[in-house]
Image (cartoon, rainbow, N blue to C red; front, side, top):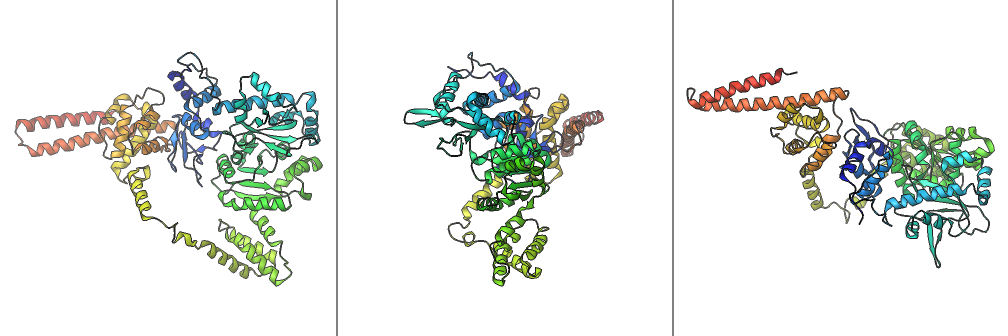
Length: 624
């Protein structure tokens, strides 16, 4: 029977893994204070970043949706892995040899996602080797005719699938992959006579996810006797979902994040042409239209939380290109960045443009981009005869909702003037039409006011009860007592291991006033602060419904200028808790002294305790 991964190895791999690097492969992270990074949450769609990562602690938390965890949790949720698969992925990432309690690695499961990744990677390497074979002359010629040399092919991992029916199946079978695994990965297709190579006699592009793992392939027909489609992609598999994959994003993501700019083209060779020409932020969809899932992936890579970024679409100037542009425009407001359209002269795509006019022409195309709103306005009004009154009115009615839909109020007056010039109409008349369109858009549909979609008071009541039970940093009382306890618990979770043990034990000895913060204190007090990962373990041990608050306290930016200042502040907060406990005890003793006869034995004992308490407090307050 397959053995378990040794627990010591599990902890060692996590300790050696930089969570910021793991998350950063999918999300653009920016500094959020001492030891804290933030970006757009990969688990839900949001306009501004609420996803925080603390690499030194190995913990992430989203203040929007509440998701939190460590590096293993992140991979499990993002890639739908088992815990063991996540450990193995991270161990392979850092080159750490895992040990198994019963003597060997876990037996591979034929349906395991990790096996599908391995199969795709093995297939990619095999396809690349075949590109240098004599049979692949047609593939090499295809690349050469489009201006790509061997270096460009290697950079993008381009390969060749031989024309035989079982070349890949036999090669990967020799590496230990079953036909069932290869079929599940989309590398084999099932026919009446059994499984056969899906890609045959084609040029192959590996399709990688944002982390660089091969999840599928795109294959271009090369031979006239191939009756299949011009481009054939991997079908939907457990690891390949074409609506969520962008070709070239693994190569472009760093420059996209740095420049806050992305160029979206329509094909594999267009991506290659752009990158070779110096436009290294180019990406493309994989056999499907650009959609909302693509936007979510892209915004996280861009860190799209300001209007400074640019998204440039390239479209063919034909009916299909116009249709694609209007689809993109429908999702335009989901970007915080400004959107543009670039249409090459003579209707050339970037690959053909580079062949005919060189690299500089491709770069110039991106510089000659047109704002998306302007492009869509032109498409809306070009169908009307603007030389007639009827045509002008019809064009105004068609285009006014476009300008009314502009989310940035500073841009709307400018586009009002643009539309007025395009139509040859008075600007005030155009403005009134736009304002009317905006009022119509603002009117809620009937379904929101009545009928089956109307709000159910019972649902609202249940939501109110859930909200009342949940405690977050923002819902804590705005009192000095609660603020001290909140900041102190934040300091303990983030820097408790740096606080001297005597101060730490004294500060954690006394219960806190707020029940949620008291639950956090109790968990921290019980934690082994010498053990790596203690803070995450402490958060996990906090009783519900207060665990989410503990996660927020661990992930929230600590108010300090640098690491040294944060440690000093955490120590200061711990000392304030100790002094507060002294003061509380003193008030209780003074009250007790006042309740008993001054010369009684009990009174004298209380006064002695009060004197000793004052001395202890003075000694503690005098410590550096």
